[in-house]
Image 1: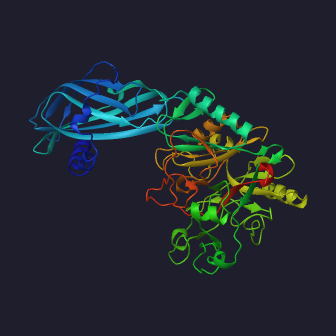
Image 2: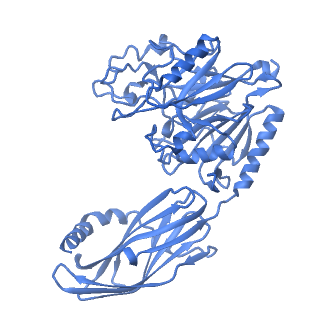
Image 3: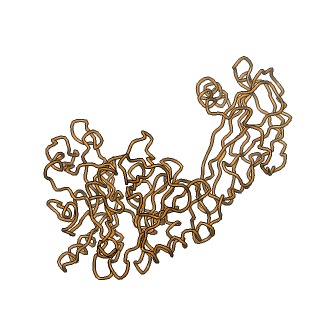
Length: 529
């Protein structure tokens, strides 16, 4: 017990003031008149112990929890009624509350800690605010209510309400637009794209939430995002021709080859220059859309330099293009034509993780295949690429995290799949008639890998490929070539006329330059040119 009082004194002196800076103001603690609130009912708590002076002290109060129904953010008000502390004089109370809200369908949990210092009063309400970006049912767990009674700042009594005295209940968040309404909007866009051949751009944000299907139920996610629906075939011609931004190792593309610091400690050369979305779009000859592709090597480089300071790295996994008529005449990897760098994901801790591969083969039907690696450096991917090449096929191949497998496996996956951040993915429908590209989610409190799988599952896309996410996830597209639906398209984050770039999500407010880009160009034969 003594250690609890010592901890209380330390916390009261050093940690709690940091929390108070983020506390909601008092005027925020009153429910909005139009809001509906559900209260769980009062529960009496009686506790006693001995304080740091070995005096017997006791606490009696009642707790009640009220949740604001339906609306975001999820407000949870913790009420403490008839606070009665006996056994020592006090002139103030520190109240420290820890709670979490768990979305029932997905299991995603947000935990909040809220601390307030109040005067000697017997009634108190403390508001907790959860973002609750997913619609539907939530389990709410008030894990701890810790009251520290003080006299002139010194703790004279400490009680932690936990265990059987803690409170557990449920809350509900209503989406601004139903799952079925959003799916209908997407289906209408799909139908029009198939009929007219004009790509669609569905903008998520505001009341237009991202529809998710977990198999066992549906929900919507309130976040910014973009869904592009692009025809693969139009009037029996290939509508899209994919190209990768290849490193030619010549001219300005030889800058990293000449940088002696552009190497990792294990000797891996970081020869690929990095480009922002606007730079990549121009280098790819202003295609219909450009998007970042593979994860890339972010390990420290020589002489205390980094990929950010040198603007040099290499794509991870297969990165190959033999479509010679492209802007950079394919890729020019050395010594292995299929890989510009390591053939696996590798992080700052040198942990190696398997990468999957997406093959876009320009045969008569122009098909997309996804190959899942069974182990790190799986030779099957290179063998398949070599087989296609020797058979004379023109194709591109890129690496990422294949869905749904990488969203469901308990094994390590690339690039923090559980985190909620900006995500980017590409997939095709079963008959390869349409390409679906999604980019969206904020850098923090964004979209998890499973959310991404739930989106594509709801669109009846059996397999898709997640590409590099976080601050790397970006789109650059011809502004006037798409029919825009949903929310208002935000202003472009790029300056060039005729180019629309997705919102910057990096905290520093700048586009993150990356080494690997894929451009999807319109085949002029498909549009009669």
